[in-house]
Amino acid sequence: KAGVTQTPRYLIKTRGQQVTLSCSPISGHRSVSWYQQTPGQGLQFLFEYFSETQRNKGNFPGRFSGRQFSNSRSEMNVSTLELGDSALYLCASTQPGDTFYNEQFFGPGTRLTVL
Amino acid sequence: DAKTTQPTSMDCAEGRAANLPCNHSTISGNEYVYWYRQIHSQGPQYIIHGLKNNETNEMASLIITEDRKSSTLILPHATLRDTAVYYCIVGYHDMRFGAGTRLTVKP
Image (tube, rainbow over all chains, first blue to last red; front, side, top):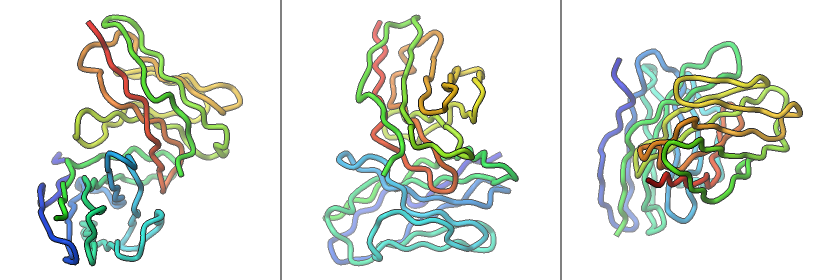
């Protein structure tokens, strides 16, 4: 079974631009979560999507948005990029069951550099 | 904000057991405790999870106190490849990672 894939793996943008990152979950997984990881702030939860609906959202400004498609693939978008948005963006998928058990499978991440 | 508190760093001798503590005093009744680890800049890797009972798998053991306010991850025979940042997380849909514990296994 293929793992979580993220594209692109590396990205360089300049301040003010926008960027779209893509995540393909493990086949059959319906929940996708996004995280931002920086040296200073660590791993921070951005948002989680399930069945094309945003179910939870972290404490990030509205410049960060996402969506999920009917095939469970997800994209996140960052508009008006700032230098502080430089980070490793990680996507994780899970197959929610009937209980609260929730093992997440992480992708390799997209490293975004904002110049 | 993360719902857990972990030591910033720990050292362990190769071949010895590594015991990583975690405090989660505000855990609610239906929240699981999960442990992940992250090596270098790879995506975090699932290790183990538990609700109330102690758990063991091929990688580690998880000991949860009776009041569920703290837990300990045990790597029974640490190797150099176990050097990583270990995250203790509680939650369900919005899993909040803290800073984790940087475990260094030394020869």
